[in-house]
Image (tube, rainbow, N blue to C red; front, side, top):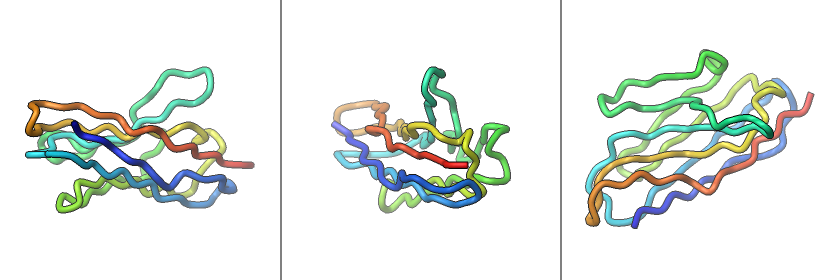
Length: 119
């Protein structure tokens, strides 16, 4: 079973920066997709940034130029560097990792980490 552990969420003022981390553990053979999603109160979960299976990145229009997704394959970890944060970035951020493990294909979610941006 593959488990994800997130960290890095915090309370920050508008214009500030945060770096989220998500580490996967378990009997992982390969990872195909690594991404970040967020869910604000009363809203649906939305894609923030993702590494596709081809290794290309895709960002939500609202975060382009401010957020950067990166990965450390040796550590099975994905990061989200968030700069120039805005109050509308306030949400619970979830990582999602898909791949294959000793038990077959997997798609796991992190527990969520709260990001709050004050104005």
